[in-house]
Length: 160
Image 1 (cartoon, one colour):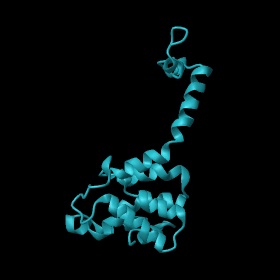
Image 2 (image 1 turned 45 degrees about the vertical axis):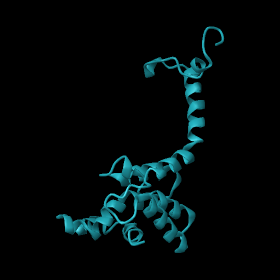
Image 3 (image 1 turned 30 degrees about the vertical axis):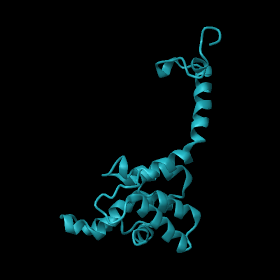
Image 4 (image 1 turned 180 degrees about the vertical axis):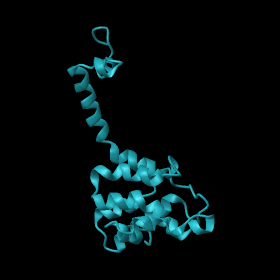
């Protein structure tokens, strides 16, 4: 404590409504944001570990699948960005099983190309080609994107 306030109090904004924020408040928030952002890679790796043991009915757990996909991309000579996208494409499965591609795409968007972002964002629809017809769905649903410039790249991603 110093001056009747703890150090933690000094490291937090004082307002409770957005329209009450001061320059000092926003400076505190900005510094905190920068520090937090610096730990993003470690948090992503910890979240990736949540896929360990999550089989979802598949032969291998989702962490193994993610590692296998990234390894295949690397062995196929893909660039680092593509390999990272391959590693993280299913990271959203534990938080949002029905729209996991959106989670992964949102995570990657600031750091990857438009093409790789689109591939990750749409891979769920494209992978449906391999099984939706077994579950009463339309395996060709991906064809609504057939004129998109990244259609073939996304189809190829799902074949890795």
